Image (cartoon, one colour):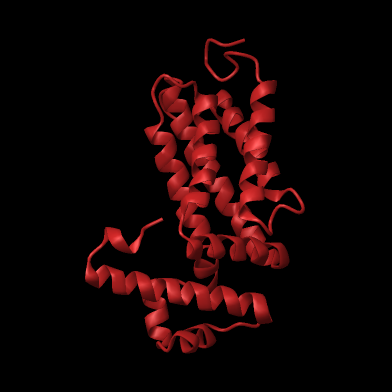
Length: 212
């Protein structure tokens, strides 16, 4: 996540407005329902115009899932930066570990935004469907990165897609486990535990072209 200390004054003002809109939007969505909240209400809560709202977000869903989009970027960048010596599956598991642990290291406001987004998804089927679609798109991009680690030229093959599907499914079990949403520390610990269980079930070399 971008922090205030990393940017100049003008960008800090823009980030402050973006965060204010996100906070107002999430609070209104949770208080009165996503479908019953208007862009005009969100803008009014921050004392800006709807036109200003659209300078930051394409619509309500863009605001509601902004934190998820931020995490998608973090996952992609982390996988790209993993050591070349890690096997594809290990690199992807360590990527999810690093990003989820990064949530714990983020500031309190970001933690609260993430947990509010999780609660909102639980009660808003339309947003949950959009989030699932975003996750599928992310998995496709990750498969391309895994294929490159496997030395595969062109589109990702079945093995790359399976590596991503297995690891992403394990992470998803941790994220979606009932009872883990109200406490970020418990949620991150559950994801880590689930990834470890998945890791133990994999045979050495399962994620490489020359593997079993």
